[in-house]
Image (cartoon, rainbow over all chains, first blue to last red):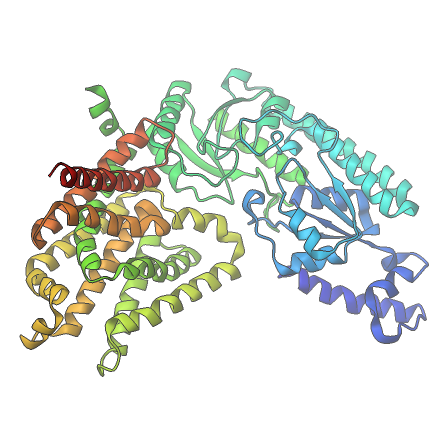
Length: 316
Length: 273
């Protein structure tokens, strides 16, 4: 819904800009008229559609004012079970570049792209990254790659390369802002390691809703004790045995906090936490970023918020 | 013997057992009326009408079970109003109301798409997430169903078996129909929490079908169906406790298994004779 709103604001603005430059756009064939308008500024923007919120942020960081980013997933969407809407198809039909995560996280994009008849440059962000193995069938590997800062940097490079392929004139800009952003990612990783420093690695016990933090755990020396949902996705109901084993494990490891994600109902986690004598925290951003004004709207803010929430839980 | 007592040491399992036992007994017993009236459709459509209540409760942030009860009450009230001048039967009014409610519910889900993943958990049931409030509601539903059978059971049975006879005897058919649909809806609310919307019909019809094969007269059938529903709930949870099968699916599979055993046993007995 926000999509069409955004478009309806952009189109008149672009038309106005065209008029100001003295271009007569007869008939109002908006898309082509705009990309034909030479001379820099708003009219030069290429249209980028990105599936996950992480990629939306990467695209904005790398593309700066050369790109107009449209997101498919929002703060309330689970990427694993997203059902595309007609406005998504509309956005894709007009896109110059489409950014997908890959590794089957957003495999619904395939149908969407063929339905939209899109000619866009398609970028798979996890390309060239070695995926962690997963027991889940249907996944080539764990798709939650961005939680590893090194892998996130590779994703940023892939995004920059994709943008440059669609907009060769902007290559220098993209490469420059990508390397600046990668430096910020390094600083973020250093901040997270600093925050975890005082806590011995064996006390960094993480229990989450689904296996989304495999890369985070590896990158920052955290112990993944268990997950409430047995599978990698957020779709299945756990069995009695899985719940029993998890409760035993939480007690054995003396875990204080179970983390759930904003986008998943926490009823079951609360029951399990009660039984095992732990608390529930809903403060992790696993698959999505925060809503506006949450303080975690960008990837870096969300990762730092995750680290702060974990550190607070381990220190209590 | 440890495997027998072990599950009861867990609070989550104790609540799940309580929910499953109450749900099994209530859906089993009421399912007999649904089955014999040939209203298999009723269970399915009641499940659909509840979606509206669930969605509204969800959007307002209230307890889902209360939303479902609200939708159920609204359904019965509107059905009562629609049938007041006797031009429509209660079945017809349900046939109109339930898809309407379902449509409204689905529309609301579509409009609030971000909540879809949370809602799906609700619609498919989550017996291990049952709270004390859910148990209180289940107990109230059980008491209501029990009281209905105790005080109006004879009348409901006659309406079920011989409508013209019941009419000739001066029974208030419309009131009795509404009463039956009302308690079935309440039972559905309980089952909704335990096994979810999709598997609800199985709980309503499965035990009743098995009981139909085991018994010759009505009230023993109702009693056996209640017992079978309870048994399925308990066995299903034991199964889930020692396997990777989710709670709701395990219960429904046991219902189906019990029916297979009963039907197979009967077929075998006929062959021997």
